[in-house]
Amino acid sequence: MSKHVVAPVTEFLDGTHRLVHINGRTIAVFNIDGEFFGIANACPHQGGSLCDGHLGSLVTSDSPGQYRLERKGEILRCPWHGWEFDIRSGQSWCDPKRIRTRSYQVDVKEGFELVKGPYVADTFTVSVEDRYVVIEA
Amino acid sequence: MHATLTSGAIDCDLHPAVPTIKALMPYLEEHWQDAFIARGIDHFNPMSYPPNAPLTCRPDWREPGVFPGSDLTALQKNALDAFGTRYAICNTVYGGQIATSETMGAAMCQAVNDWIRAEWLDRDHRLRASIVVPPQDPAAAVEEIERCAVDQRFVQIMLPVGVEMMLGRKFYWPIYEAAQRHNLPVGLHAGLMYRFAPTSTGWPSHYLQDYASITQTFEDQLLSLVSQGVFSKFEDLTVVLIESGVTWLPGFLWRAVKTWRGVRPEVPWVKESPAETIRRHVRLTAQPIDAPADGAQLGRIMDQIGSDDMLLFATDFPHWQFDGREVLPPGLPDRLVEKIMIENPLRTYTRLEGTVQ
Ligand code: FES
Image 1 (cartoon, rainbow over the protein chains, first blue to last red):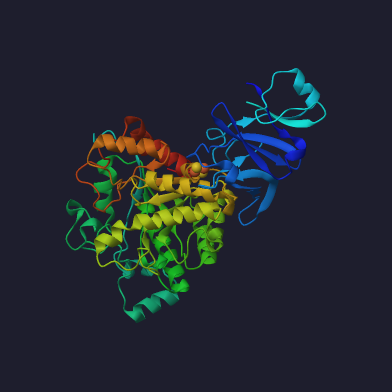
Image 2 (image 1 turned 90 degrees about the vertical axis):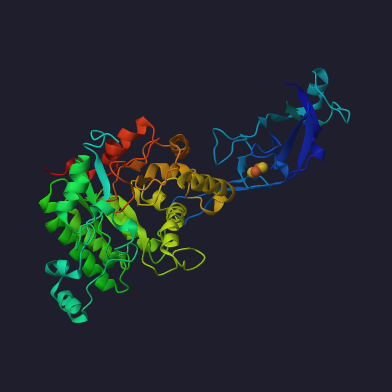
């Protein structure tokens, strides 16, 4: 596991996502209301690109005919066959124990913390004054 | 099949038959006695089992001049004594469940229930029965359940699998509520009210199609029950598929699960894979199984079904599903055979243990 800088916080806008490629893996990083999440982008079913799916709510129910929306904006539906994944845990809704996409720790770090330690920032320079989205993968 | 293997078994599907409406006369209300005599119609057996069709009665169980299944002595000899049956559940398939008139349907169902109690259950302590109820009128069906359920020898509620609407609809929920309250599984028997074509693409030309295509109706109704939330609402309800065949089940489960995974939010009350729900709530009589010729393949199918709890022993007497004593096809894993004979039926029909000898 190593730390990778995804982007400066100011450039990673709320409601958007980015794909990062780390050691041959493609990881989708999302900004949802200022909170950052990272999951392996390939759907465990047949490899659909999860970041292209609809990010919506979990539809639940207390009894037949009743609908309730929970976890607004935290459930990702694979664009290929509609399986739902929890953006926090990577677990599928249909079979959470057996079907999941890997989830990654994503944090916001101060630039001065980063310049001390080992990190990877391929495409830009980290400056001490800024804050950055950092993924551990 | 060894003679001893089936001894003590619980036969979950056999068919005492009403020979003609005359047999029901003593059990019909006055008005209906009068009406049936005035109409001069004798025969209300549904055409799902035409009397001379090979399936309707095994050749060595046929007796000249006797309507197949209508003779108690023959049933005792060929079904109960021959297999050493401990209990046997009588499922009478008759016109009351099909009639277009709700009131006539209810009257005939009530008469059949009283007839089976007096002429069959009272005459052999091994016999139990399903309550036949009129699907035309769920309120009348519930009344009939209440009337009969006090007698613990009624161990199930029976409906034809093809009724006037899909069985998951709320129209039928009062029946499920009563069923759950009385510990009565709901048995869906092969057969239709014929309000619709028996296939989803139209009327078939031949009996072969009519009988073979019924598995489609079972699939449709099963998925209707699951997706309308019947098992979410009635958590203790058991549904028994009777004479549905068995080997279609794995493919159906795979398809149901696959589709559910993709469109789950439209039925959010279905909180687990339909296969799990079905394994917990649904049972099937093991006659016919529709087994492949190769026994090893049958073992694989049983593994694919993914539960040893689902099958129930049945002869389907007097229907011709097997010859001699080959009531279970070769290749059924040993671990399953005993469960099918005794344990699964006892767990499904909890009233059996409580019944007075
Ligand atoms: S590839 Fe994602 S659901 Fe099939």
